[in-house]
Image: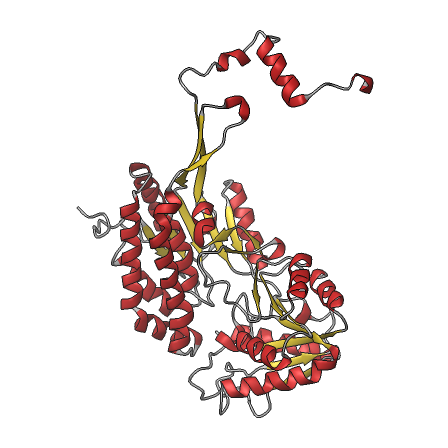
Length: 489
């Protein structure tokens, strides 16, 4: 029987937590029965997943739009579904190479023996998905986990119930729950999920919740991959067109209404270009969303009232502390209260919430600087971000920024596109996370790199056994350690 289409589903208990545990133990048993899926089986699973994404693209786009209040179907298809398919395609083409054991060199002492690394599936991977891209940020870790030969349990966000329904159906048609299982808002306490003794957890979300997840994982010594976001800067240098930079940064801030973990959080621009940058950014927004945000079919809503109020509170805090807020002229917040145009904020200080919190909305603080060293220092004075954007045509200047700052990833002369190039790893650093997925690094993140040393049949390793002091031991120590310094005593 084809294991990909069999549906001897795990019988779900009435209680959500009981079902969670039942599925976990069923996956554990299934993994023990099949601990190393062959490459053909892994590819077959990935091809089925790719086919389902294509089949369900309209339903997924419609569901995401309902959950957000509105999101353009094309935006959902490009950012959630196309990105997912690109990742599947890359995994299908590369998984055979990734699985191949890696030959390593033995130490000189062990010449003629063999050393290799085998990449073994870890077991059960728990995936915690955020609400801003519930499809791509479920599919990306899922693709990496399946390519690595693992079983997967997915916790979807409770505030995207429509999308969750479609994803359950999409995955349930091709995977038994012993392979891929989906949970959502039925879990009253999300900690019930992260406290399971998974073999690895991938969490995407806020830094605050990331700490909670890591603490829960530590109880089981479960390794974690944390993608946490942060305040991703965009540095515009004097060696780049301020007009073009403003247009690209505005696109990054307006896409999905700024609700992206790698959206440009704030911009650093030369002091003499500050007014020009603001003018160009506002015009860019007007060109992108002609006629206003209320009825524009390409502009996304803020996901719910709670997040909308949070953004308003951040703006009010900045205003009360002396910031200048420049809304896009003539573009009012829509009548439903959640389609909010770009707001540029000037005269920001570190004490304001706007410079302390990840904004996740259409707010763009713009900071003036005198020289590139000042811009670099400003970035380095904050927590390490998930992404950094450098706008410069000068190679030496770019290298100075790249070498002097830390960030999860970088796009030069644009924003965000490094993420959907799947042959390279995606991950954070410091406060913006740890670990990676995508590409070969993602495969290895979710595999155990098992070192295998094979002694040659006639290799005389017993020469290193006691009693100590034989000539081989003395020569080896002299060769590698040299002469001791007798004067140290």
